[in-house]
Length: 305
Image (tube, rainbow, N blue to C red; front, side):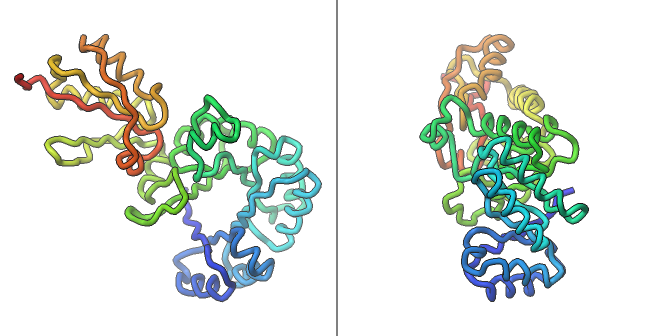
């Protein structure tokens, strides 16, 4: 089941209360982050709870275990429902946070671990010493670590959920930031999704298949999981008339050239085509398609030179 959490990314308690009143019964869950909490403190949490709403206190604690445990206890006293910590705080910090939350029994806030911020891409990870790993690989490593050490769930990109969910214990919670309507400003976010993609692509692991032919973009199908996406792509190639051997095909990727290795194998082993050109997808298409997207550009067999 997917639930909507609306971010109260405003500067004052008055603005926050106005938004909660405006949305009324349509929204039950609100996020209070660093900006609002720093400006208004615990009173804004009490105000939102006073409307009968649930609160996701997103302060991303990252400190020594004892300090984080005390912060979690303070959040529990406020009645918050979800709280965030950084997974890189280590196993002792994660365990301390979970233990502190557990003191509230059935009313205990759930502890969510932040894996990789949605504002970070592969070059950013390299800058901070995480070299040779894609964001997706780093997310998976930190996710497994955090849940194994007591986190109730994770904060991660909508694009990561479909791949993570089968690999983690049943009941693991996922919160996906960076979700906004198509055409909305992205700010400093780099791994974002529309609501439809977040629910379908992320939660369900469904991969959309899109074709661009003669300047027309069309939804050509969908597949569950990455293996299904490759199979769907290969079937679509056959439906579109195969690939001309006169001109090399172009395999494009967003994050890593490894994404197109199955495509290269298919073209050379199954279709006896020449080795395709391999290029990274440009920022315009990549921003709209999202991390992990890959594609194949080719002329069909009807091409005459």
